[in-house]
Length: 371
Image (tube, rainbow, N blue to C red; front, side):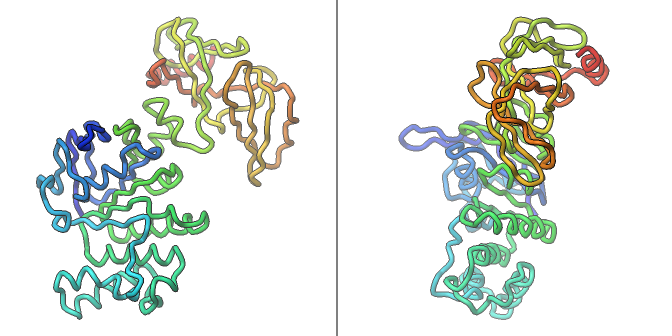
């Protein structure tokens, strides 16, 4: 296992294009750390700098306490698994997995033992004599992972390894990767744009945006306590709803907000009156009620165990999503309904998108009673 420390890491290309802007991050021994973010946010570039495939413009990378900026990639104790598998088509599975050990001069007995152990761990021992063209996508990805395992690296680097697989295989491979991490206990860094992969795999998640880390935390911390609107909107499916709000009054119980349709409520947050804010709430924390935020039903998606209902409020540019149990009666399209919001699960963001501070539980209870 290995610990990594990133201090003020920057990446600027020769043309002056800066893609990483001073990233600081500690990755613990044995941790499964996920880098997640939209395309072009810098997460893969960050991983390539850790691997030594990209130069670090400034800042320091420490691996197990040792400065690694100028250490050759092959000597960093890392193994990388790519999106494209990168298997040698003319070699068998056994030879693909053994190739790096042969180059390193290991004996045949050592190589055979290492390949056998990795194949058993990945449940591909029956595939060792096949060539890549005779394997499915999931099997090829297991071989690529096995090739990394035999090297016994201190850190595994996964660069979007499941992107080329279909939906069912991605679910299966997520389970396999989680099991592999528990068995090996190795430090793993995993890059993905898929927030479902991030939430299900990561011990902690680093959310990247425009070359910076917006927030680092456990999946539940980021889901329930987003630091800003970007994190709140990126994690979760469907994404968090955002509703424009105006702060009418600040009191001990919190902020009194005015929402579209002249709907008013008090939420347990500190802030100043008069500001333009946005209220964030997830689909599972909204309820159809006799009174509340007036909305019109636009679309209903049936997903078997649940329905996703899309609603439009007055003057809204984007619909609000609401989750209902699959067995409930479908709301009529075009009908006028009202939404109640659970104040315990509301988030409030300022004009810059930063989350307002929630009041302590005593004030939160006062706010709930005041609605």
